[in-house]
Length: 330
Image (cartoon, rainbow, N blue to C red):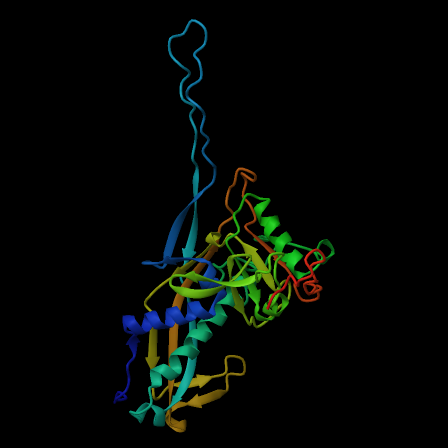
């Protein structure tokens, strides 16, 4: 007999939107990358393979001719990159007493945890290539294929490291429009001011929401589960494309069993433990574009990375020798 509170199926649109929005708030990849709504499991994106060229038409005609030179022909070649929606899932268990208590808003209790689980899994896959499907970019954004490394030997302090990372991207003809950092990176820049006394860290409005900024560009902080090759990445985030399927689904099964995927031992038995296992799953696709630019017509590396940990923090602002006042006002 079905459980009286078995709401298995597709999450209502307003709840699906809530999970996606909360996942965006907790996922650096979803905050910064270009989100692509997907209507099918596989979407082929047209990607420029060559850049067109333009020439001036007001060139004087050759001697003896009455017409100008013909307009120059230019070619625009396109290729395709596929975005394949892959499933990410979270499984938990809810005590039956909570489900049966009408005074407890079980959805408000579970929803943030589900969003957090989705955000962590997606960021680990996008940035590090951890536990991700074969269709995702191998090694993630922090692999050498998609991001240039800024070595410690080339930088003075953490601020200089960020500036040089931005410069490494700009040198390839790619406009930097955001950063991502491990949560600990925030301590490197908190309180640091420029020569005019303005805070290096700021706040900006993105889609009517306040977002932190660094050098005037949005930055997303994330307590990544692992920090190995780098803890800061900057670049042109329009080249990170994340396909999002809106049909988030879930299933409540009071007789379900949750097992450990490694040991295969039973962790939760819905019937025996008076709990109801809950499974939620969504689908995301990821691809990273190496854009053609006038400087690198064969494709640029759109990101740069650096390990801020171990770099000297920025020095505190010194007294302005000319005016006798502190450059860093409080």
